[in-house]
Image 1 (spheres, rainbow, N blue to C red):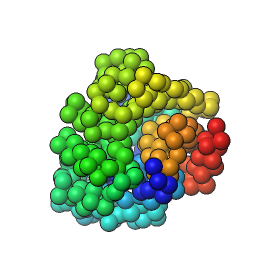
Image 2: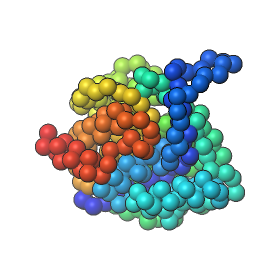
Image 3: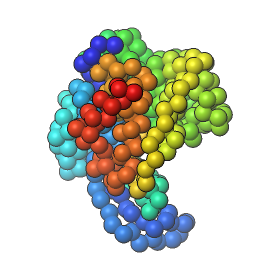
Image 4: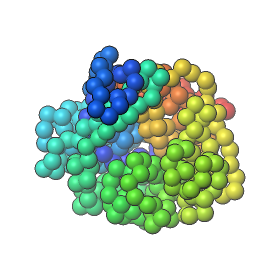
Length: 305
């Protein structure tokens, strides 16, 4: 893959409002938060920002409302160096996410979806037309099934490397897997999609369904990479996690950008694990993401083994 290729992210963009709570509330219960914070979020925007901080040119295709939140989201993306030419404003409000974070770093998220649901091929096609051979097309599970499939199919036709992080899982992916070069899933998602609690078995089943290679993220244990019958593990350094929000998105963005920069899959996975591990030691979503200089150092170290 040529170095200097672009990452084209087609996904969602939200306003994240995080509350730090002593524990998750039970039904009907009010829990007092120790604090709150607002941040740019949404899996698509998160992954686009992580990719941009990893040194790859990034074009982002998403929808935000023609409102104050949407204006703020656009401004933040520009600050991060993410291309916003393909960010559209349908006649619906900007999506929002409410995030509960416990002292153990675990999170629970509820999101609105009207803006993401308004994405269609008419909005996505200009971004796809700008993608070429060797570019990386990165998508998530927030968009409609037909849009996701059509985008990945078009990306494959244009000889881009297609990367899919199918979260949140809203539907089946049997008709989509044949257009996916790399699937990135966590353990819960791999079990749901492949019917096995064993990450190795689950990954191999997804390969059998048409995916070229599969990465299963394993939280504190790192990640597993499967290509055909071959598998390799990437260990994570032990850290004290304070907030896991967005760690998976850091992994996906750094991994996609590493491929665009010409790094091998194993090297990309090592760098992505290290970047995601660093992010969980900090509070917030994008506020917790490693900086450009931190990711550059991580990728240099990953390339050295």
